Image 1: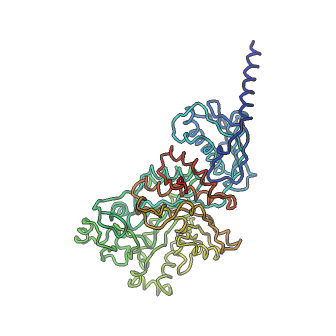
Image 2 (image 1 turned 60 degrees about the horizontal axis):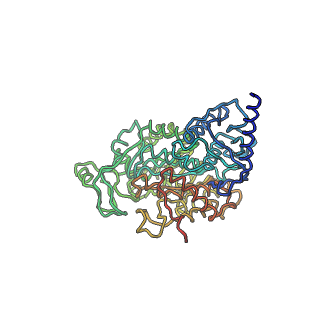
Image 3 (image 1 turned 30 degrees about the vertical axis):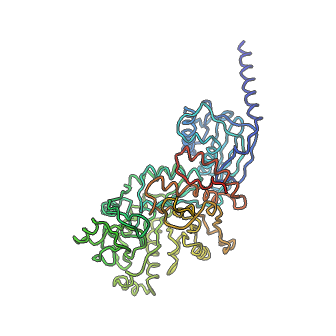
Length: 564
């Protein structure tokens, strides 16, 4: 009798396996973004249920825990991690030295097993992200859905086109809580992007705690009002606005990102865009006794009263480019910035520190005795070379800490710092020039990568934006390799980045709306082979991914759904 029972159980198992194995998988089962380098669909599917286990080496424990939590929440039970178990019914994570690309992976789904291989843990993680997209969008709800999930059989071999795949988030113009920064990181990871450029300081706020300089957050993290409407504004809202991240917050966010293989690059702006720091410590200005000025008379009543009482410097309440920049002629300026970096650098494992370098007017330097003395002492020809001196001096200090700098393309002016990476935003000209000088380049031109631009020409029915028009299709059309570069020079283009400047994004929903699905398009630009990309094909897959966005409660623009 016992033999008969075992025979019947075995027959049932074989029957179920054969049924899965012989099921055709429709084309829509493989709607993955960014598009994999190679995908071969197959018959059948693997069922994830309470009997499924995860096999992994200790080096992939973090990835196994991530996968177990993701699948466990969907089927109502955590999947056990059994490092020594192999065979049918399991999901195996493994490292494979034969995979050439550091971020490459292979995903094999068969009716009785799933194997995800990567050269590194990062590659395995990206394989998990692809597996995630092969499952129903409803798994994103974080709630139990049913007792098992079906994964279509497939063999995928994949690797990224570019090493740098980034998104920038400006938290200085408008502040966003730790929870939202983590959600932003989640979405970066879902798209197999690997870098968050965190814009932490500006004229309108200083957002990171520096213990040696407490006034940076006590004063610099808050403005006394904000202009209403588009610059130059129609009025001031007269409301104190601000917030900042403690160093413990930063550690928490950095650790969270690391688990998803997202590197965070901090940006500390210099020598321009420093009005918030100057409001906290006026000696950083060329002219500490001169009142802060703005482009219009929209200053808040509270700031006017402060200036009448003798407090000359205020945090800016309007947008734009300000003449009051860090003084390039004072040693105290460099001492301050070095002290700041001494606290910032240990918080971020990234090999890069972004120092800004953009939009730094020279009007104050031109009439500043300290700056003119510096120009004479260092045998500089003009204020542009003073900026180059400023950047190169800070680069040398940062290099001494084991880090490298990134700067906006203005750092080319007056001579490029020896080891600097250029982030080309004013078109591609700066990036082309830097690559021809054999400097690393990250492409982020306004014409393709500025997600604060309008997504529709019907601006009356769009959220207020800085201007411009950047539709999804144009983002998708971008090729980060300029035709002006030869094969050797092309190697210096590390990748591309989307920028989310938040002057006109007051809420989390607004950030999401302006970012998505343009981030989605950019993710395929920087991951997938140029020759395999097709707008019509992408748009079809995007409609599928949008269902996942719905479950994730992302506020995204839906123009791509409109039929032309």
